[in-house]
Amino acid sequence: MAKRIRYEDRNHEPIMPPLIRVKTFREYAFGYSVSLALDEAQRCLFCKDADQRCIKGCPIGVDVPGFIKKILEGDLLGAYKKILEADPFPSICGRVCPQDRQCEGSCILYYDTVKGKRNKGLPVNIGALEKFVGDFARISGVEVDEKSVKPTGYRVAVVGAGPAGLACAYHLAKLGHEVHIFEALPKAGGVMTYGIPHARLPRDVIEWEVKKVKNLGVKFFFGHVVGRTVKLSELLEKYHAVFLAVGAGRGRLGIKGDHLKGAYSAIEVLTRVSLMKSDLFPQSGTPLNLGKKAVIVGGGFTAVDCAITTLRLGIETHVVYRRTRETSSARQEEWDHIMEEGARVHWLTQPLEIIGNKEGKVIGLRCIKMVLSKQEEGGRPKPIPVEGSEHTIECDSVILAIGQKANPVAYEDLPGLELWEDGTVKVDENLRTSIRGLFAGGDVVNGGDTVVRALAEGKRAGQSIHKFLTEEVKL
Ligand SMILES: Cc1cc2nc3c(=O)[nH]c(=O)nc-3n(C[C@H](O)[C@H](O)[C@H](O)COP(=O)(O)OP(=O)(O)OC[C@H]3O[C@@H](n4cnc5c(N)ncnc54)[C@H](O)[C@@H]3O)c2cc1C
Image (cartoon, rainbow, N blue to C red):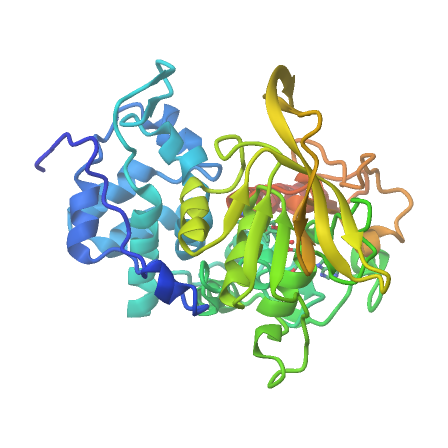
């Protein structure tokens, strides 16, 4: 195998030009061609201690050099199977993982995690290669996840069909357990379906990955709000174990003036567009009145996704974020994308108050400029206000993308369930809660993180539940 060491010539995925992509919700990143994938795969140095570098950087432990090697050997099915050993959903992770902070952030070309020093190159584009392999399987209709083991007789209920619930169900079904997923919404996928815009993660990609779970015999019960249509305590009686994976889908408000007409939580806006088709109003039934100019507050995935959405709805889009781009949690290239599409980002700007008119309608957002201080806040420099820099950005709507919190509807009938002060569920290292037979994982435990972390916790919960069933539950 020819080994070339090239640092700066990372192959970027071809993407639609900004003026075209801003007019459509179609996916704007086209993915690698075979030749681009082969060229990029050759940049991998196949580090002997990759388990301390890219593999360790991946929360679900994908054997990165292993699958890249298969690409170079022309064995795409082998590459796909290699990824599936750790991660059930390569087409999703290749698209949405913040690889710059995970596998790619630990690539030796970029940062030597063993020596702890920054190198001079750009990392291997692991995300694009994973997407390439996942899409090869999807487009060619490869199905490798067959249920081959005998049914065990154990029955497990999973609450929530987001990445954590799906991954748990996938692993349990492969071990021969009967799994039923109860989901409040009419579709599976959780935030991947109702939050992340189609332009970043098309629905047919999610449907393909969910089909793998269905093919293993997992049954889905949609429109079941656990805590309302069925109680968690009833599920605990009817099933041998229950996995709680209801995410953290309640949008945070909490800025003065957030009651005004035209102030929204990000989740409301994204759900209305992604799930309820308000972008097609009046042909479709759900209206969304954001006016001509919207200001989005926040600096994470959610803020960027709101900007992608409002730009495509033809709305003048501003984003205010109290820190800098480098200290934000969104993917760096996505900031580039929304700015190319016309979003104006106000870095180091803290919102103070949403301003309304006499009719109670939003007319602006009062803000203050910030500066980064030497003090630390959560491992990052703390922003402090610049005196006398208050100013108002006029707008018709304000969208708050300042985090989500757990929605306790599913578990409020279980007084014995131990929670943290912020409402997230307490678990031990095996993801067991304080109630026997009830396990939990994903955002409802970690308070909001990434798709791949939810997948990893779902998988870990599947392993713990299997151990619990086979060692502690008699049939
Ligand atoms: C807008 C947005 C964009 C994001 N973008 C990215 C990204 O690009 N990359 C990334 O890695 N991460 C991203 N994240 C974070 C990531 O999506 C989450 O960390 C991940 O989806 C959490 O998975 P989960 O399965 O724990 O919860 P969720 O995905 O929230 O799924 C929970 C499921 O439970 C269901 N549910 C809730 N309550 C009940 C109930 N009572 N009864 C039955 N069902 C119920 C919900 O309807 C939902 O389907 C983003 C988050 C948001 C909000």
